[in-house]
Image 1: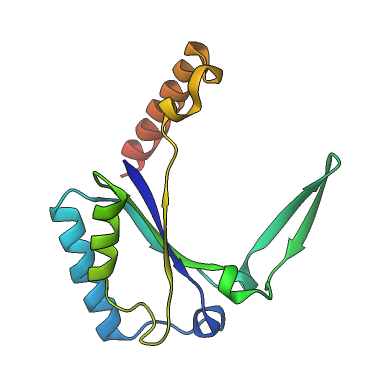
Image 2 (image 1 turned 180 degrees about the vertical axis):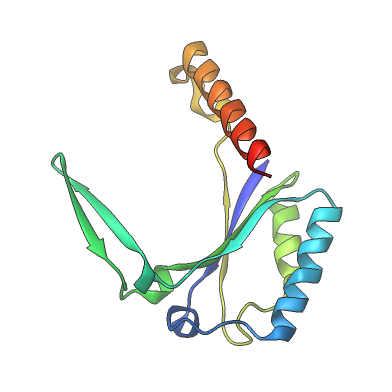
Length: 145
């Protein structure tokens, strides 16, 4: 099972405050544990929403909205993508995570859909397309490394 672990933003992360050397070192050690355990697939911090944009879809139109966005508690400061056996295992790993802001913080855990979750609507042709795209992505990124 794959889970996205979402570190929610706060006023400091939205102001562009960078983490301390200690927090970077603590997170580095935690990430090493995740990698050694075969859990971590990806993980990154995100710039504040002031450097981002949203695209709103309505009635066939797309409207671009530049950041910053006001609802800080709804924003994301960073994420991991983990492969674990259950939600309970993901929760146990998050409970071991260093405090991301040394203040109040929330980390949300969301399961990623797998092909079998989509049922009959995900036809063999669509599955083949998905497999081909994943292989292309892997090939593109292995060439750039």
